[in-house]
Length: 221
Image (cartoon, rainbow, N blue to C red; front, side, top):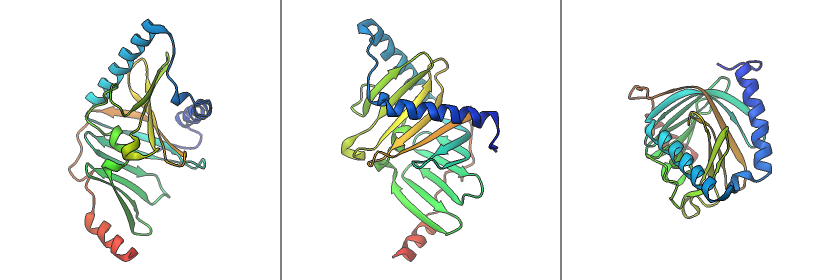
């Protein structure tokens, strides 16, 4: 669990501030221009990073999430490729997020409500896909720097103006954070740490309680 004064959280806050500066400058929408030779090297580095990320079939760790209005909350995350994800938010948040490969559900344990969305219609699909092909039309931009490599993915025909920006460590190729930008241009950033790769999960970790989901939707009607 992350405390307000922990070194890890202090570092994440610093990186969050830097991320805002980068986004304000519009860097996530630009290519790094360094000549033909440098451009080829950047492409090779970015594809190596994408390949490494795709090779990690499961991961778990801690996260801190920053919402569009600056709200902040932490918790634990679980990812299994393809298509599976779970966020367990720290108390007092009653929210949990589960993706089982078909759907993404957001549950509120306090209100006993659930929202459900097709995974294929959310930018999370790209984060949880089998692989990232940098030649794909979904790749909007790639930026390679000595410390961070940024890959922006989006598909206007599927997600509208929504995008997902993934930032990787350029040295060890590990994923450090991702930002989902919605159609209104609002950002939700998730920074991850204490990550373990290639772990095995219990079968029920990504189980969606569809009976509760459908019951909740019936009540809403």
